[in-house]
Image (cartoon, helix red, strand yellow):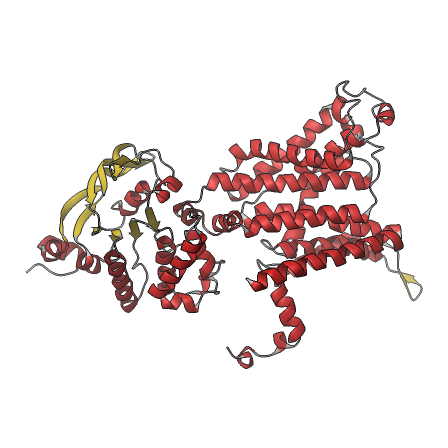
Amino acid sequence: MNHNKRNIMLTLAALVVLFGLACFVQAEVDSYIRRIVNLCLIYAIIGLSMNVTNGFAGQFSLGQAGFMAIGAYMVGIFTVPVELRADVFYAIPMNPHLVNVYMPLWMALILGGVLAAGIAGLIGTPVLRLRGDYLAIATLGFSEIIRIIITNATSITNGALGIKNIPPLNDVRYIFLATAISYVLITLLLNSSYGRAFKAIREDEIAAEAMGINLFYHKNLAFMVSAFFAGIGGGLYGALLGTVDPKNFLFTLTYNFLLIIVLGGMGSVTGSMFGAIIVTAGLEYLRVFDEPLELMGVAIPLFRPGLRMVVFSILLMICVLFWRHGIMGTNELTWEKIIHFVKHPLAGFRKKGVQGK
Amino acid sequence: MLKVRDLVVAYGGIEALKGISIDVPEGQIVTLIGANGAGKSTLLRTIMGLEKPRSGSVEYNEENLKGLNSQHIVTRGITLVPEGRRVFPNLTVLENLRIGAYLRKDEDGILKDIQRIYELFPRLEERNWQMAGTLSGGEQQMLALGRALMCRPKLIMMDEPSLGLAPLVIKEIFNIIRRINESGTTVLLVEQNANMALKVAHHAYVLETGRIKMEGSGRELLENEEIKEAYLGKKKK
């Protein structure tokens, strides 16, 4: 148990160092990079949340965009300053019960998470009886229903016009803290006996049931936890953009996160973190391909807006073909592995036979 | 200990069990033998609460188990080693054992029991950190048994523990079943390997297309001419 204590200390130390880094980014780095870092952090929360249902509990759910929308709209509805609301809701005035209700960002975030989890609980009761593809289709459908309800509840959500004038959140430290808290909470949950039950359900439902694991309860729990953090992430996303719009939360948004968890490794918390960074930063840095390129005086016709996505898709295909379990698979980057690597940096290259026992 | 009375279980319109009554007395090994599709696994799954019976009753220590979820049945001390082992392939041996103790909260007792299971199956201790999916068939069966023992069952039900294993390994598994029984656990064993099963059983039932065709002590059935012909592959003289 000595090792456990050491790992906790090391994790705390790492969080402090990373927080220091976040402060540095906030103070010294230009706003473009800062924005990418913020997006990475927010995508990490949502990727993690999606990994809880898809990677750990093994339920293929595609409802993340809907839960994000709930979180984002809670932030949109409650954090716009009261005096600016008439400008935002210029077509149809805001519901009189809500027009004077203001909340600080953190409260709106938690409210969004709780509401998303509550709706996930309601949806989950009928939907989690389905398996595999059927579950994916049903959750995808529900996420669209949420979006359409939002589009049509005009007096609350301003409908298709979206909500503008959300006080923009451009603070790396704030978003970093939210990510760190989500990471710690999700890791604690997954390392508890609940996490073990999730994995058992993923591996073999019948055997899990025979061990006395209540399938329905645990699937629903995973689904609700996932929706909670997706709501938080969605809220931060809305606050980062400064505006929410139903079109932001099309079902295609969910695929970004599916990509993150597949690339990072289904069933790996640290994998989702890496996946979020690679996908978000990768999409930004591939922008070179979107700009026209002249080689020896000849303009290469391929280099035009859109090529970036082609290149990115090809990279992904290569990754999925040759690296099927993603970067981490179901493994975690643990302190033991890091320490081992620091002590024996070449061990991985040696033949297995040389390593001995 | 366990009393099944006139149990009828149907999948859609087809009755898999057509009114079955068996008794499992405490401390014994009771075996059910029968061909494919006789309803052996269905019976175990129904006792476990994984299938709902159409009629009839299952009583355990004078308590009717009807309508209970499998988690409540596990807490009462009944456990199932499912057919085809069904270990959790991408989890380590240790994690598999811990999931077996899922409904228990006594951390000290769990650690002690893991130690006890490693004594019973030294091969599992060597493979503590290995993924269960990488074990051989026999080791997986041992793990499935160990996992079931982790919830400290009073009645352990096994569905074809010899399935797909080499003869020597089957022998080892049956020795372990005997040891589990000697340590005080009642065993309900479902088998196609009638020869081995009848040798260890105190009492045996022969199941044929959803009905009990015959019953008796293990030795009686071993010497029965009909059984010899139908299940043990010996010709009538």
